[in-house]
Length: 234
Image (cartoon, rainbow, N blue to C red):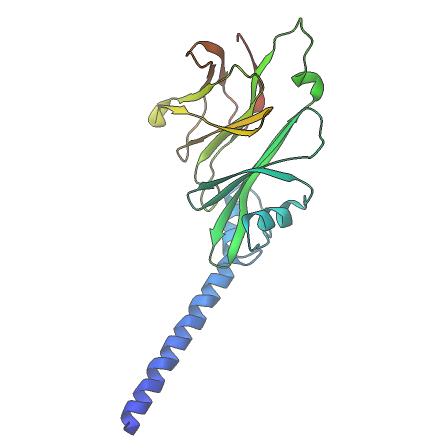
């Protein structure tokens, strides 16, 4: 090989190596804890300080590192656009407790990007016979500016075995009738979830029906970050 060709080959290899190093540097500055992605997420959530979201090799590890809750039990994994939804509960807890977390896939692994949960005491879920029986409970996660959750999430637990169909009706520009996914966890526990288009706003009409299509419960949800329960017959 001539000296010219050798120099040209070294130049090409050196340019490629420099490009790879530069690309990795940009990716690292974006994905590292407290980096550009965390700065953007913090501003989207209305925070003045920048959160430091740790990296994980799996969605479970990323969420566990962020939440510092290794004892929570993962009961369902839901692949979604850009990442993974994990539903967890506190083992041996009384009443209804459910948490949903969204982990975002980045170049360097996984990072928490949104989520939270609710808890309803046993006294509310196990009601006396003379009070209305709960059909389901719910929580709403609004979508915020990217890179956080790229959808609005409505989810909860089914509390009455007669409930076979749950729907969320939206209004405005994103008007639609969205059917919930019902996920059986075990013989006694079922969760439900609906992913609405990014930016969908309340009010939502939440309906629960039996397997014959009979309306069992209905409630208008007006709190963009609300949580609660819906009784049969409402």
